[in-house]
Amino acid sequence: MSNYESPIREPLITGDKSYSQITTDIVGTTEKSPPMSWFIAFGIAGACATFGIVGILYLLWQGVGVWGLNRTVNWAWDITNFVWWVGIGHAGTLISAVLLLFRQKWRTGINRAAEAMTIFAVVCAGLFPGIHMGRIWLAFFIFPYPNTRGPLWVNFNSPLLWDVFAISTYLTVSLLFWYSGLMPDFATIRDRSKGKLRKYIYNVLSFGWTGTAKQWQRFESLSLILAGLATPLVLSVHTIVSFDFATSVIPGWHTTIFPPYFVAGAIFSGFAMVLTLMIITRKVLKLEDYITIAHIESMNKVIVLTGSIVGIAYITELFTAWYSGYLYEQFAFYNRAFGPYMWAYFIMMGCNVISPQIFWFKFARRSVVISFVMSIFVNIGMWFERFVIIVTSLHRDFLPSSWIYFKPTIWDVAIYVGTIGIFFTLFLLFARTFPVIAIAEVKSIFSSSSAAAKKRQVSQDNENAERFKGAPGIPYAHAEYSDQVSGKSKISFNAEDLLLTKEKVKN
Image (cartoon, rainbow, N blue to C red; front, side, top):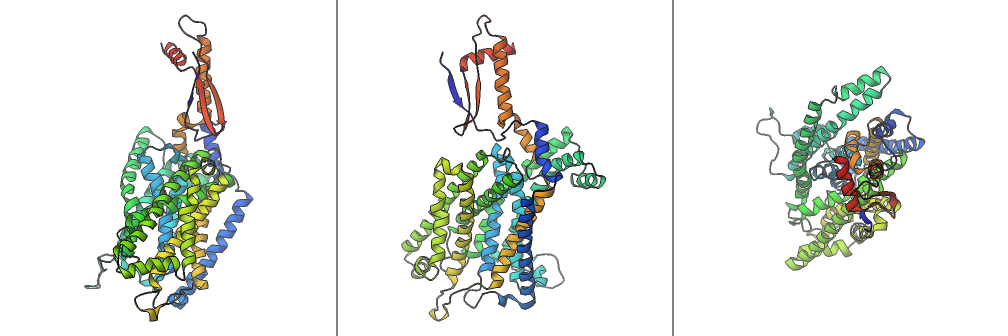
């Protein structure tokens, strides 16, 4: 009988690993001194963060007039950055919650860093509404709590207040999801620690985790509950952010396509940022065996899907404006494409719609260099998308006498660069002190999704076949494993004979 060659799923854990080796590799990043590249990146991120903090302090001292805002364009870089950062935080919840509920194993190598990215992105996003108020010390007025101010309450009809509820809920659930998943790994670091202070700190962080069956059962239940709570947030948070624009009467904003369009765009930009961070992390911390080409390819598939959805939304907007016959809506979209900001519009279209289509080709999805460059392009394009939506809808309003060209000042740029610095500073500190990959979750897929386990299974099958070689009624079966043959792992065997052999061993 001829051999049947069956393609199997590509391993998500490569190399000749064992359970103890997984722990050593991942925890080692917190035990050893980081490489020089980490210190260089931390220095650059810290300098950018300092630049941004100086910009925020100067803004608080002088007022929001230091920005390039004016009477016509009263929202610009501040709200653009706010929406951009909220969108980046979306991929963490999707990877953690939705892919967990769908039992997607490839999430295990990237979910920890994606969850951390969500926390840090939401922190950066939360800065902008506060400093945009001008008097940040009065920010407590936006929170609905029992007070002694008489009838003075927040406006519950305002979408800006809905943002407060949505983002604070999103931050809370994401923080719980992230921290609860860290507890078993904190206990692992605690048990390997030699210094008393380090052991005590990680024991406190792990809440005394001992790894009993009851604790694991509650851990699994909590993960599913939080995943169930977080899944609606994937849709609700950016939907509510889109209401900041969609519930207004400004041409270019007042459209019902904004909620799904914003959600798809948020997942699009979020996965691009996860890809950027993961490619850097796997190289700097030498985690190529745990963040594999298979992980990168899976993320690229999501990027090309959501990028195509965003492209369809752009075309739908143009069609709706034309078909509506509404003069002002038509002018708003004509002005975007052919007005003073046409350069921003075509950067948006090129980065978000055209460039991701390269991921239809397998060689591009599996190329680390192409994936990294494209992830940068996507985040640039998504920032320009928010800029185009906000600024081009405002700078030419109903009165031509008030038309104006918005130009950012150095303080606009400083605060934006500063939030990028704060984000990367927090992420680098996280990668230095916490396991950047979920140890327990990676081990849970080791027996089914690792190259080493599959090799051992093939070896065991061959041993069993050798034991019964020549036995009456048991034909000889042989299995072969080839690692990364043409980008795909395969097992070749005589399917019927091997099944008979296993049945004999069992009996």
